[in-house]
Length: 65
Image (cartoon, rainbow, N blue to C red; front, side, top):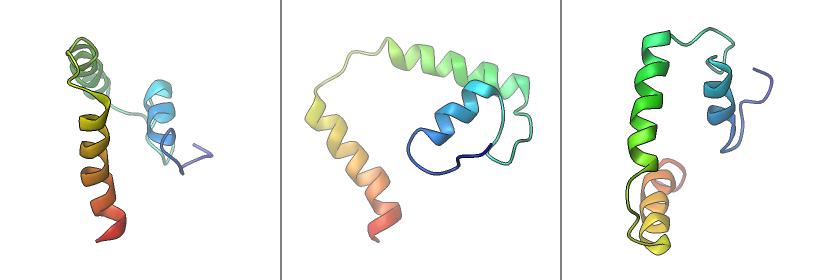
C-alpha cells in the first residue's frame, strides 16, 4: 500500500483486501467486516450533529489528548 495517510487509506486497503503493509487480510475477517458494514449501512441515523460529535470524541481523543 503506497498511501497510508488520511481518512481514506484504511477504506482503500480494505477494498483491496490488503493491510497497510501490503499483506493480505484474512478472508474470514474481510467477510465479517463486510457483513457488519452491511448492518451499519441499513441503520437509521439520528442526525449529522450526533455523528459529528461521535467522531470528534473518538478521533479527536487520539490526536488531542
